[in-house]
Image (cartoon, rainbow, N blue to C red; front, side, top):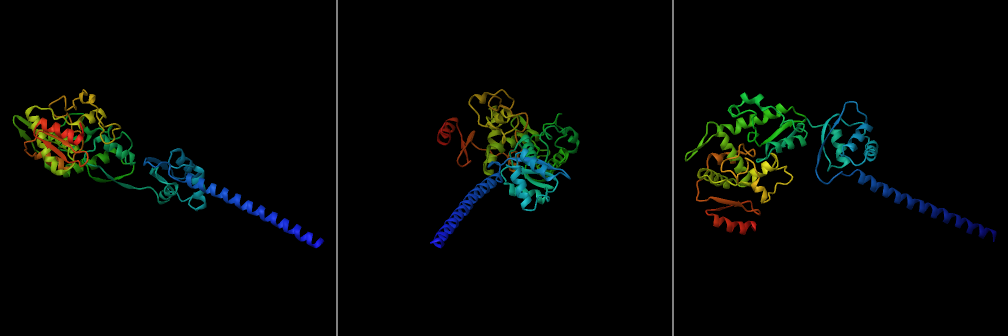
Length: 359
């Protein structure tokens, strides 16, 4: 009987130990899962929206300080999680010094991989047709090529005599229109003068040969190279397809010839947004803003804006140099297809406004 009771007690003790172990394993598993989940979230990207931030890892800077700087800069979510992962992966002391442009939409895993690989020496930058000078400056500064404001603060008079297209411009030089859109390779943290020289050299090689010594005569009016470039900048913002550009150019010249305002919204956006168009926070115009007092308001004035309003590509420059004659005087852009819908009369234009724009 005692033997039987002893076996029962031993079984109860064994069962109790088993339950304790199982509960311990269950709690441990749950805690581990929670910690793992937290750890993975903490190592995830700061934002789902791309936002480039600059950070410098200095020579000899400690890993703990680097991690703290990454968190303080809003590049990683958690200094602690980043440090822990870097340590257990054996990469904590492999981070290379240098200047980095890091995207907040990248995870800590991707950030760590970039810091191990080392900083980029050069970066490819695409400047699209139709970007304004300030749009370009912002894109370059966001990419870490230059510091914000370094191009708008640059003295272009200092390079005036190096380029034929700048020599006749009044000081201070308005550089809008001459920052040729193209694909460039720039060094990270470039000197502003190096960026300016590379872009102006490109305009000089690719666009200036077409514009040099060119004039357009329409009736009693003659348009010089600078005015032709201004017209090209308007065409760039108005026409999406190359086939439409010469016709739009012809309409602009025709309106200028008869003394009719050319009525281009983008020129008002340029004034409203202080020289930005692509990076303008609110580019949509209200009816009231069509009366904005500005020399760039092409609804109020029947002349060209005082400067180009964007940096046009070769197709728009060619269209400004070779306007296509037509019976059209009005046009609008189909918001669905971007195709230009041309009209001969105001009545026809109003019908198209209802049909395509719902106005």
